[in-house]
Amino acid sequence: MTTTKAFKLVSGIALTAALGMSPALAGPGPDEDQLVINEDIEIVTEAAAPAHMEYVDTIYSGWRFREDDTQVMQMDDFDNPAMIYVDKAIDAWNTVEGAEEKSCASCHGDPESLRGLRAELPKWNADKGEVYTAEMYVNDCRTERMGAEAWGWNGQDMRNMTALISSVSRGLPVNVAIDGPAQETWEKGKEIYYTRFGQLELSCANCHEDNYGNMIRADHLSQGQINGFPTYRLKDANIVSMHNRFRGCIRDTRAETFSVGSPEFVALELYVASRGNGLSVEGPSVRN
Amino acid sequence: MKRTLTAFSVLLVGASAASAADVIAPADVPYGEYGEVAVSLSGQPGDMEKGKVLMNRGAGNCIACHQVTALEDLPFHGDIGPSLDGVADRWEEADLRGLVANAKNYFPDTMMPGFYKYTGFIRVGDAYTGKAGIDPAEPLLTAQDIEDVVAFLMTLKDG
Image (cartoon, rainbow over all chains, first blue to last red; front, top):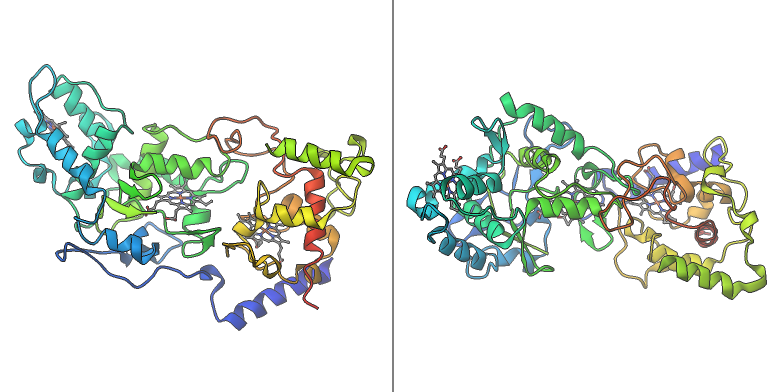
């Protein structure tokens, strides 16, 4: 027994040395491509990891792990299938709704007035005394300021609106605050990130920190960043929300997931967003 | 689906099928000092052809994480774990059985799931539904599945 084990370690080292790669990054890794949208908006897809990250030196957008034909769709808004949802959101933005007979535009003017917001979300909402996501802000305006019905967190209208909110911040650096009143929520999100859930006992970190760049079956693992959300997924032929992505990844570990919009997923969103501090806001992006 | 398939294959082997009494329940596995398991979990020998199928499909899906040259006709081998080529030269049968049953005995932090592990999970789900499951859970592979996979692994020799 002990001999076979020693043998195993030796052969493992020999193999790694022979192939000349580090065991941590045996797969194809991120590519070297650069992302400029509409020949205008330069997107930072690689940056030094924020100081709070202990185990990663460089952060990468998920775009860098996708095939060329998927990547190219995001380089021009005419080719980006997510942009039709942004257009729908612009219509909704200008539509009067609810008892107060107001539209978003009545108070906010152009959608561009929200430029910069996406880069800071989720953030502490002092009035409400909790960390707020885009969905929570939008629904507060609908219910409290317009007298309209709340949209479902994962509903099409809400996903469209978050795509619009993201699109007007494209190119700005993600800069989520993790200290002050948000810190407690951030810590909670961090704990979830490192917890090995389900019958497969896998954490976000197992796949997206320890193995980004590697292949798991046919999937090229990225760092699981959320700077590109909502993302248009080719397999769904629609845009998907962050929480829906989280839910899918946890479900795949044969675990009981948390719900979309739950406090756990808000905390996870804050933590994962903060792992992207320094990348550009990129959503709505295109992924497979 | 999985369960009906297994039941069906037990019928096919007919007389040689393991009687339930010979099967070692997940809670009773006699793990050795390092995590090795010296006896067949089903009381029966493994079938390497069936093991080969499990390497690719169902709850096995070993090539999601491992490259195996003998299975190179199958697409998409992952590279999360080491290549399993020559694994029978590196490990004895009892070790391979123990590794598949619960690799965490050998490598405490490993990403490799415990295929005969049945309890001690956090928020265990009902398969891939995302809904709550029950603990203790049905192990990912049956005792006979593990024997079949081990029989296949034993064919992976470099020499």
